[in-house]
Image (cartoon, rainbow, N blue to C red; front, side, top):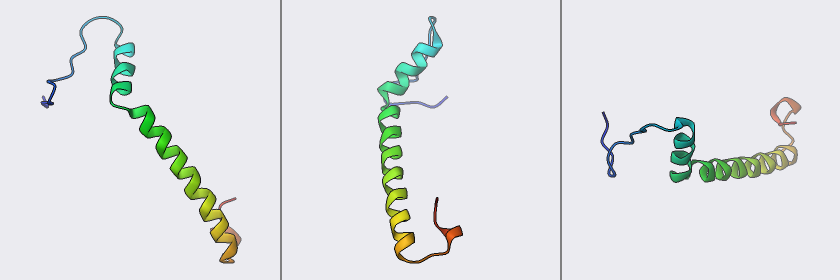
Length: 63
């Protein structure tokens, strides 16, 4: 078993789904996911502008 600075993560009793989502929230998984989604959206928007200004073929530009 892997060891973590705070000790191993052990789920004892109760609803494991709730514990799982609490653990995701504690590790900021949702915040990082939103940051990736926003940065990817900005990148796609910028690339679509550049693809059209560079006169790339239609199959190279996202629609």
